[in-house]
Amino acid sequence: MRTQRQVVDYSLQKRAVLRELLTGRIGTYDVCDASPYLKNAARFHGEPTDERCPICRSENLIHVHYIYGDELKQSAGQARTRAELPVLAMTLREFQVFVVEVCPGCDWNHLVEQFLLGRDGLVGTEDAAEQEAATGSTPRRRREAQR
Ligand SMILES: [Zn+2]
Image 1: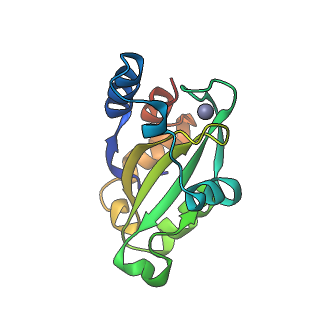
Image 2: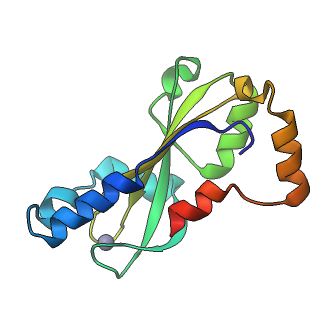
Image 3: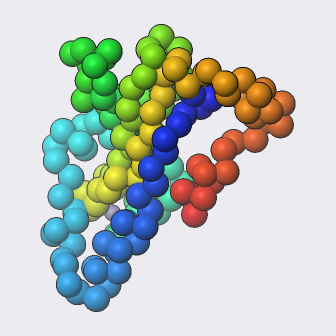
């Protein structure tokens, strides 16, 4: 998404949690605790991924996108499908997106990344956006996150 900025990647934190699990310092009940709200959001607004759940390895993870920001008013804190985000990004100046991965099988859940979207990000990034459109490449960051 061309207005994406201020990306914070949480893969290091996720790896740390998985390490703690392996060493037995925490149990699966500590991390497989997705709320009914989160599971509903995953079911109705989630983005399926090709990534296997690191805990049960029987289901693929689902990404849920939560949006926050003053301009969203009563929609703040709601889950949105990934397809809705570019539309919102063209109508709003700035809002925060939190991406959470959820396993529908064992209820594992973890923050994947957060970033800003919105029209404010268009200023001075025209060149980068054009380049991205010309090469048709997806941002490298996204591919790395899926590994
Ligand atoms: Zn699982």
